Image (cartoon, rainbow, N blue to C red; front, side):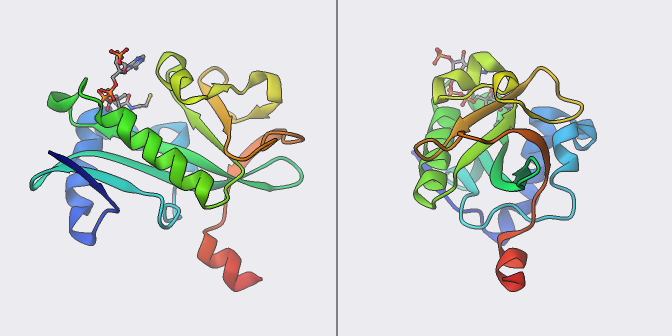
Length: 171
Ligand SMILES: CC(C)(COP(=O)(O)OP(=O)(O)OC[C@H]1O[C@@H](n2cnc3c(N)ncnc32)[C@H](O)[C@@H]1OP(=O)(O)O)[C@@H](O)C(=O)NCCC(=O)NCCS
């Protein structure tokens, strides 16, 4: 049976290995990684899936801000399932749990870079019409409100966010 829980420190190596297998070791050159460099993922939203002792899936969210108003948002990803375990609903379960937790925690909207055909089922839409953009990702950027009217008035460039802890300390 698959279990889902927040990652523990000793999951770190297995998560990196899974991401290498899912995206290849050159994944860190992707545009989205520039938004994660030097920042921890958003506390309490990362999840891993285990089958017994084996780590078979992972999802995380990073803080970003959007536009002149620096509206805080989430960058969803990476999402990955072990190649030999795909097609059994683990990806959908990680996405649903992650999105629900992010909405419950009061986050306003999420963006991601990914395949439209996969992410449309979770309510993500192409970012183009909103004017939200990520330089280097003109086609695969998608957005989703997490709160009522969460996308209203949000437009402009995505920039790396600040960790929630740093934001609290600065307040
Ligand atoms: C995308 C990924 C997380 C899906 O995980 P999974 O556990 O196989 O997904 P699920 O079993 O929950 O869902 C499978 C469904 O998603 C579809 N699907 C999977 N990848 C897809 C893609 N890139 N585009 C469109 N549909 C996709 C399958 O066809 C299947 O559809 P169905 O339910 O109509 O049969 C997994 O394939 C993966 O790790 N891929 C490599 C990394 C990656 O691409 N991550 C996402 C960034 S785009």
